[in-house]
Image 1 (cartoon, rainbow, N blue to C red):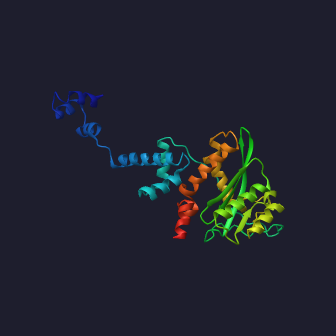
Image 2 (cartoon, rainbow, N blue to C red):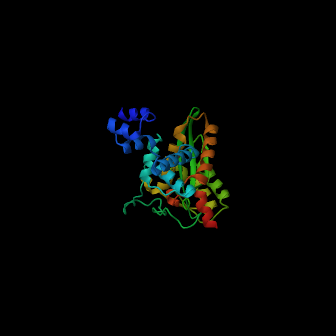
Image 3 (cartoon, rainbow, N blue to C red):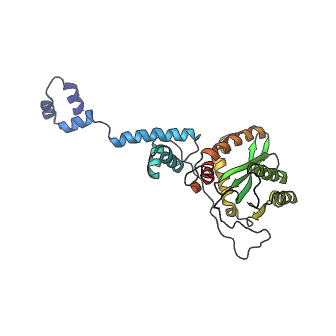
Length: 286
C-alpha cells in the first residue's frame, strides 16, 4: 500500500521526501516499479516458445528428452533435462511416460528348438545386417486389425509394414517381401522375431528361404529378446494409435502411413544419438 502511495504522489512531491515520510526505501521503490526483466527470465520465455514450437511440430509426441535433443541440434541450445522438464511443466505440457523393455540373457538350460542368433546384440555396424519384426493389434469400429512391422536395427528404421484384418502368416510374408523390395534384396539378413505361428509357419519359412534370410527367435515368454520391436510398438501406441478412434482398416492404414513417414524422417532416437533413422542411414552412406 505504501509503495502505491509513493507512486501516486510521485509527481506532486520529491521522491526523497515521500520515501522518508512513508518509510519506504528508494531502492525498493525502483525495484518494484522500474525493474527490467532479468536475462534468465527473458531466456526462459524464449525457451518456452521454442519448446512449444517443437512440441507442436512433433504433433504432441515428444517428451522432455526428445525436446532437449531438438533444442541442441536445431537451435544450438544446450540445456539440462531438468530445466526442460520445468519449462514444459510451466506451460502445462503433459509428460510422455513409457517403459523400455530391458534385455535379459536366456537361461543356459533353455530349450533351443528355435535358436536366438541375435542374442541381445541390438546394435549392428551396418544397415541390412539385422532386421527385427513383430505384430500388434488395434481395435477399429469395424473390428480388430493387425499391424506387422520390420525394423532395421542399424538405425531403427521401419523398412516395411503391412496392416490386415487377420494375424496370419500371409501378413508377415508380405511384409518381408515388401522389405526386400524396399532394400534392394540384401542377402544373409538375420531376421529376428518371436515364436508366433506367423513366423514359424511353413509359409513364412519358405519366404525366408527364398530371400536368403537367416531366422532368429526369442525364447518363450521372453519379450525382452525382441526389445527393439517391443519398444517401437509402445511408442507407436503412445504417440499415434491410442490417441484416435479408427473407423476401419483403411483409416488405420492412412494413419500408420503418415506416422511412419514422420517417424523415419523426423523422430530422434536415443540409439542414434538423437538422429532420426533416416539421418543415421544417410551418414552411413555418405
